[in-house]
Image (cartoon, rainbow, N blue to C red):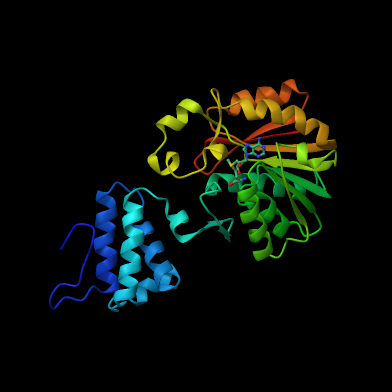
Length: 295
Ligand SMILES: C[S@@+](CC[C@H](N)C(=O)[O-])C[C@H]1O[C@@H](n2cnc3c(N)ncnc32)[C@H](O)[C@@H]1O
């Protein structure tokens, strides 16, 4: 059997169970740190079933067409392509979002930004008529919040027209397109003077040097425009924070995702721009992740 092409040996059927075990080992050897999950997600996609259903189908012969399609995806995964780009979607806050190579793959850490906004609303620190999501990418922040806050209108911006197309289709899929307006342009400029009660953003915050050190999976596949801010990582924040002040209604909130390395600098930046109640929220791994404050 060749290394990258499992084939049906004489008297040997490549059942779903065997495919999973073989591919798990193959992707582990190829350097994936999530080989079992990758295997199951890719196979479930090709079979058109939920991942959990694989376990009831272990002895099934999936047929040549499935094996061929699966083999092609596994090859690309072994070469480094992220699973989300191969299957074309990613789960975020228990919702399914379309992703393409024009959009960042949504990260679990970003769900903490959603939680901060929901906590501010629940705690009645803000009752937002309108929220802006700056650098919306696939639209995860605006769309997830729109599903949670049915009375709120959303403005979502991005510099990438291609990303906004994906975001628009995600808004339609989640039935919130009537409350989320997508606008192309630089940071808050597309808001065109319209004020919002809360501004949330997961902007690019990776430094140029950090990108060089990141995994091939990130560096070779995800859009650099979505990741890299500049030499220090702070460049976008340094423009966004003063811009946000001009878009926020009095006592409005600014909620920003960041990296644990930049959280202190970002907290200082918000304080220097006279934001009050500046707070840092940790992610599930206990790292400082969300910095937020009130105008
Ligand atoms: C880190 S990604 C976040 C995407 C999405 N919000 C998420 O959390 O998955 C940053 C996004 O900001 C966009 N972006 C980069 N520079 C921008 C700018 N100057 N103005 C507006 N959007 C920008 C990128 O195209 C990308 O979609």
